[in-house]
Amino acid sequence: MRAAALHSAAGALLLTALSAVPAGGVPNADAPGVPGAQGRFAVSGRALAPEAALSPGVALAAARAAVKGVDFGSCSDAQDLPGAMQCGTVAVPLDYAHPEGRQIKLAVSRVGATHRDPHNSKRRVPRQGALVFNPGGPGGSGRYFPLIGLLPEWKRIAAAYDLVGYDPRGVGRSAPLSCQDPKRFLKGPSPAPVHPSQSYKQERIAQAKAYARGCAQRAGSALRHYNSLNNARDLDVLRAALGEDRLTFMGASYGTYFGALYATLFPSHVRRMVFDAAVDPDPAQIWYRNNLGQSAAFESRWTDLREWIAGHDDVYGLGDTADEVLTSYERARARLAAQPAGGKVGPGQLQGAFLQAAYYDDYWPARAQALSEYLKGDPKQLIAQAGPVREGATEAENANAVYTAVECNDAPWPTDWNVWDRDNTRLARVAPFETWDNVWANLPCAYWPVPRQRPLDVRTGPGELPPTLILAAERDAAAPYAGALEMHRRLSGSVLVTERDAGTHGIAGGPNRCVNGHLDAYLLEGRLPARRAACAGRPEPKPKPSAAR
Image (cartoon, rainbow, N blue to C red; front, side, top):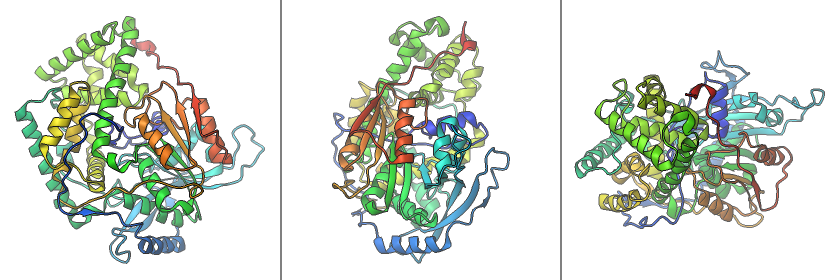
């Protein structure tokens, strides 16, 4: 689930409200039925069938964690942040087949239930346990999630639950994974050819091979243990360490995938689960075809953004049709290719900034204004929004390393470049916006130096799993809607709530009161609508007043 920025609607709101909190990440995702997705799949090394859950190893690790618990204390990096967040660690085996072997520590954070009813100050709200959150990725940090309880949309949930976040294995402060020198990761300016030449493709192939080698050299024999099944197993150990007999969990984007793995492996350990921006869990889609589907979906979302800009031509002056806005965008690309803005923003940085806007429509006004000002001769906003942030290089490189390792380890990928070239050349004819950038992000998986797994068949039968809640935006490109439908089919008893005609990636705790009503009813009362429900889409963003010409 590759994304330009790694946070759900909850994370987006949190980062808006608490600008001191570092953002996380990089992600990847989905949609079946893309023409040309069928290819010849060979596996470097031997293919690994996922064993049930390595049950003895998980049970042993969970039993140890239950005895030890989590020794929560002050957070060394949260002194200046609002709220009362506490931090601690939980030890998990690197390899669940050898639970007495090497242990790694997961960094965990918590804000205790407030017990305060935001609508009735005299009413004390009973505690319902811990709500564990993962923001996606792979590679996303959830350590700052507990601060979400400061926002109005989350106060009812924060009254009843300890809000718990954590860094999954390899991420942030949890035995961080690295594949290259962070100073080399965030480079600018860079190209982003829509129709790459053969020489450019060969250059990117060489880079992908070097990156895969770097992952193996830096991680050594541990590299193979960064995968989604182990993320699900770690989640059960965390559950035990928190003293919870059954888990209440909310996953966004990629977090829905290993949440679904958890539900399949440990259905009796589930209390309540929310899947926000659900990824297609069909084993045949993990992960190569999911990425093809994501690239196809981004083309529609890119059109949505251009149509919105065209509808505000009186503000931005970029054209009054989507095609005219595209012409303005291409003019900026050509100018940046000839002379990068500020010496660091080229076509690649421009594309990355607008990809982020394709994830979250809150970015639309700022991106449109930056493009407008740049074409009129003022590059300051474009440089500020699209330029590499050197201070975040270590975090970004780490997130990308975890993303790559998990996706490459999870499933077989084509090892023949001709398969990638054929499928994506065909796709780029109709969906040029994100197709090739998605290829370059995932191409190390073609040359991955450790064995791959076979994806687990996510599926639960009637009565095996408590009712779960799936949330999805109908026009989400990072996690196309077909994935939510597939998740709904595979998790018996699940309920799907759809935000109609909306495309923001991750909708829980956002501005849609209808969505939040279903979320609150489920988490606070265990109450769900019928098998499917729909909410009207959120209003489109409005141009900022300062943007007027």
